[in-house]
Image (cartoon, rainbow, N blue to C red; front, side, top):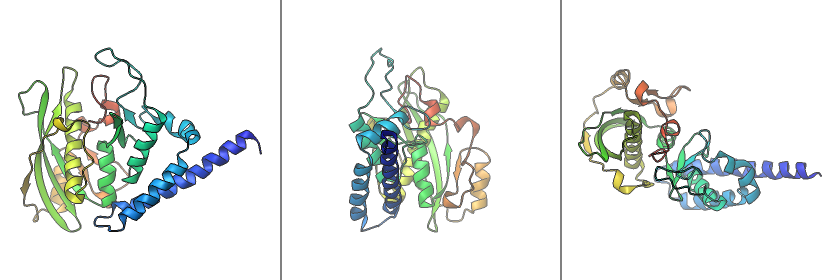
Length: 275
């Protein structure tokens, strides 16, 4: 067998293990799954077997800092202070991928970022997690109501339905801003905060933030038990984020044009990607 054929067989074997790990990880998304610890151990073991140095170099490292892969806060280019930090090592990226896959995220589609050597789900990541749980929701993202030049205070109203329960609450998403921050970037970050808050409320799982001080969540619940799906959908036509979970069509969730910028496209050199 030639060296090329040997390399392909290694990649194929790793692919099968990776796909199996992703499939097993989906079981971890079941709320109140008391056997989750045993599944998690199996998932992590499979991933460590699959993600050898060779596989990482050939398959996953090229995805780093690309729109089709995942973004990081180290892209090899100078930051706003003129500092250039090297891109993340193979070991850091491998651990981040293992953390991501273990909770149901993929290393494609900018579903997670690596910030300060840690994995954090992005707006797209929380969208995928909520859809996997079958959560139907509408998020109305407002505009900056604060006066602080360093932080934006953006109200977000969330209505959702999950397992027959209808509920709603509001948060004030506080996100960092500077002279380079656009309204779309700030509202995109606020939308991520809202989806994160919804996921945490439904599951009780908190995966943290790159900067814990940049998110202040003031939760206010409202009664939406009498609201119909049609009423929620009608709101979606006026703008915001509408998602019908596992029953959604193949098209992307309905998002107002000004909100449609993804974390990948809105992440500039002067802001952290996806946050």
